Length: 220
Length: 276
Image (cartoon, rainbow over all chains, first blue to last red):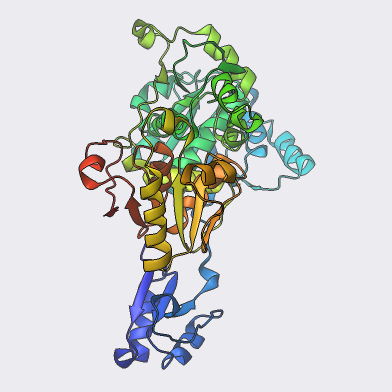
């Protein structure tokens, strides 16, 4: 990210400043060698301060857009998708309990139907998730499902037992990271953790750890 | 792939009971190496990170200074990193139920112990942004502009015993250079008190434009140093190297060792820009 731009007032035109605004969105400070063109910056930067020019390096006029004081994080939330029947064997509750304890924002998309759907709805209402948004989509067509898997950051399959879990191979095919329990057969597809991670079946803390680490993985 | 567990520990064979207590300890700079190595490799390999810290008890430092502050064990600093690792009790269970020493276990239990402090940045440099973001997120630091000051790291304590310290004449000379010639405002970060610094430098009080920063915790010092526009320190200290590693692009560095000596210290691929 570019941190500073030195701008010479004589060559500065409105078009040039527009270019600066468009191209260097991450610019933190703009140094002017005189205050001649400060009005241009009034247009583009809502908040700034000016120091009068002196023959001293420290007193170069600064126009600082304070609105750009963003967090360092590249991505501040995690999009999680769960695909499968909402039944005890698939253990969707574990995912919900884990997401409840995460410190960052989470969007969960649930694809599938089952007898636990009502319980999951109640769980979200009861626990008043602060950082979590949950969408229940029911059954979804294959084409649409693929698009949804691609849109999300991570597919979580916390099953108590799953012979293979074909949705894992689909997620890997389309480049979505996968977190599965140790009782999912498709864990063997996750070569050295490059495509996904495994946690011990039923361990909420390990799932939380894997979600936290994936949140970090997104910052690279 | 099976469940993988990674654990950073410095020399586990010493007197210690993971994850509760360890007798004898290292400085924060040295402890951060195995921790970030384990963390970044966990992120890379999809492994679960175990609780990364012992409470250290450092009798040697305490006996040397007879000062309670010398007993610092960095637990408060590591508490901030707790969110990214397994809780203590789970970590304890896993640690004592697995074999960590013998590499033959890798097939059945893919767990790796990151031990030995291996104080270099060469394998961490690719993860520099990740580590910076991680620290800022853990300490809830929002993006700030670099402070227009010079952070001066003056390490005494063990450096005097190991004869790695810079002599007082050179320290005073460099401080004069910064304040008088370059007109910088200097903030000193040190492991010693103002009284000890004055005694070391043979002065009664610090010159104008120079102040000693009151330390909240070593990690906070490290973060503040990384936010300074200019930094000066002894390249033998991994603490100051960590501050440079975490710095914003464009920080200007001044080494207290001459180039000939600095070039023989293979700690960081980030070169010092100026030599005093």
